[in-house]
Image (cartoon, rainbow, N blue to C red):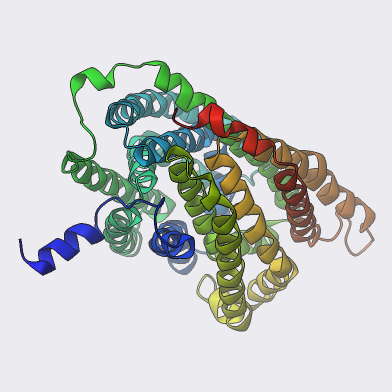
Length: 467
C-alpha cells in the first residue's frame, strides 16, 4: 500500500482519543464535527433562504413555525443517538469487539422501530399541533402542514443518518461523517433550487429536498460501516435486541427527555411568537437560522467532549479527564467568540440573505445582538454537559434543562410580554423572546458549573465504564 493510500486510510479511520495530547485529540474530532454541523445547519438555512427569495416572507414563517413540532418528535432520535454514542465510545475505548458489535447492530434495529413510530405519530399530530400553536390560517398553515408531512413521511433517512453518523463519531471518526454530509448538503442546495425555483413546489419542495439528501447521507454512512470489519462485525445475530438495547435507551432517555422538554417549551414560546404576527414570526426564524451557526462550535465541542470522555472512561484513563475538560472548554469558548464576532460584524448582510424586507432585517439583527453574550456561556455549558454525559451521567444535564426551559424561560417570556404591554404594544414587546432565552442560557451555565464541581458524574465512572 502506498504512503498516500495509507495516509488516507488513517485519516478516514476511527481514532483512539485515549492517547496523545487531549487538546489535539479533541480538536481532531471537533473541527470536522464543526464543519459537519455547519453543513447540516445549511439544510434548514438554505430551505429558508430559497423559500424567502422565491416564495415570500410568509413561507419563512411557515418553515420556522414547523420547527418546534419536528423537534418534539425528534426527541426519540436524540435520545437513541446519545445513548449509542456513549456506549460505542466506551466499548471502542476498551477494545471490546463483541459488545461494540452488539451495540451498533442493536442501534440499527432500534432505529427501524423508532422511525416507524415517529412516522405514524408525526403524521397524525401535524394538523392538531399547528392549530394549538395558533398558526395563521391560509398559506402559512398550508405550507407548515406540507413541510411537516413530508419530513415525517421521510423520517427514516434522517433517523438513520443521525444514528449511523453518531456511531462513526463514537469511534472517533468524525471525518467520514463530514464527507458524507458535505455531499448531501450540496445535493440539498441543488434540489432546493430545482424543486422551488424551477418546478414551483414551494415549501413542499424544500422539505422533499431535505428528506432525499439526508437519506443519501444515511446510505453513505452504512456503506462506510460495512468496510470497518477490522473494528466490529455486522452479523444477523447482533441485530437481535439484547440488554445493551436497554442500556442504550437508559443512557439516552434523559437526553431524549431533555429534547422533548425543550421542544415543549419552544411550542409554548412559539405560540407567544405567533401572537405577535407574521413579521415577528419571520424575524424569529431568521434569528434561529443564524443562531444555528453561532451555536455550532458549542455543540461540536460538546459532542467531542462526550466522545473523548467516553473513550477515556472505557480505557480507564481517568487522569486524562481533567486536562481534557479544561482544554476542550477553552477551545469551545474561543471558537464561539470568533464565530460570534463574525456574525455581529456581518449580521446585516446575513439577514439580507433571507429577505428583501428592511424592517425584517433590522428586527432580526436587534434580536441577535440581545443573544450575543449567551453564546459564550453556552460554550461552557455544552462542554461540561458533554463530559458528564460521556461519564454516564445523563440525568444532571436533563434536570438543568428542565429547570431553565420550563421553570424559567417560558414564564420569563410571558412575564416580560405582560409587563411591557401598552397602548402602542397591546401584546407586549416582542423582545421578550430573545431576552428570556438569554437569561435561561446564563442561569443554565451557572447550574452546570455547580453540578460539575459537585462531582456526581464521577460516581458513574465505575457504573458505566467497561469493567
